[in-house]
Each structure stands twice: as structure tokens, then as C-alpha cells.
Amino acid sequence: MLVSKDEPLQTSMPNVGFLVLRYLERQPDKRATLGCIAKELRKYDVTHYRPLIFGLVFLHSVDAISFEAPYFYLTP
Image 1 (cartoon, rainbow, N blue to C red):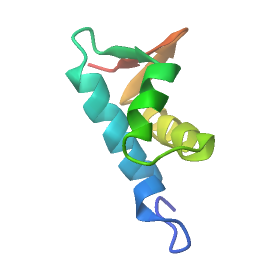
Image 2: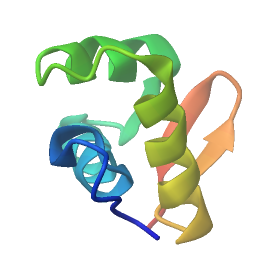
Image 3: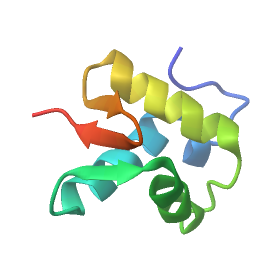
């Protein structure tokens, strides 16, 4: 289940994933660190680690991003 009726839509996996993808697309080299992504999400009141991790796992499971320490890359 991607969205739960008990969870605020703002912190759902698809919404957080969208915010992360939009941020990565704006970066000139299409990559960012976890700290940069967390800082960006704070602007949208996503302040806890759980939505961030679930959003990143969601994007990785649909092959939208890849990990290579210390960066998250937008998959071409």
C-alpha cells in the first residue's frame, strides 16, 4: 500500500518521492547527499527520518534513483 488512510498525504512515499525527484532534477549533476535531500524536505515540513527513508526506498524500488556513497543519483 503506497498511501495509508491513517498517514498524512504530505509524508506519503509517493509525495516524498516526488519531492526528492524534483530536487534531484534541479541539480546540475543530478546527484545529492542525504543531508542536502533532508534539508530540502524540511522546506515542505517533512522533518522525520521515516518518510525520508521510505520515500528513498520507494524511488529505489521503482529504479528512479541509485545509491553510491555518499550520493543519491537520478537514474537516466
